Length: 85
Image 1 (tube, one colour):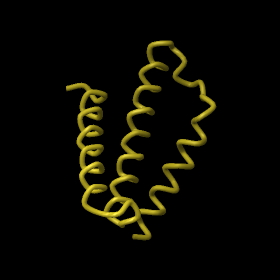
Image 2: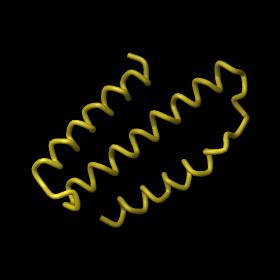
Image 3: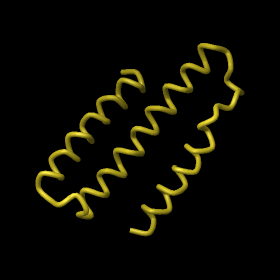
Image 4: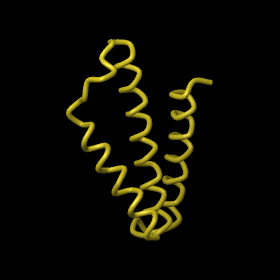
């Protein structure tokens, strides 16, 4: 199975998990917030994977896109938040 298809399946499962948790708990419950962060990171991975494929097909592998710095900053914030919990 291709990486994008696998990520898409994992994303859908994480989305369903978040949906189930929000019915069980308040939206500010730690389990809901954690699952939301997991889903955010999966969405970022999926987006990065798609961008990498577009770059590969277009021959612009070394070209930086405007959002690249935002993805790096978000990933660093996510790792910091997870290490604190």
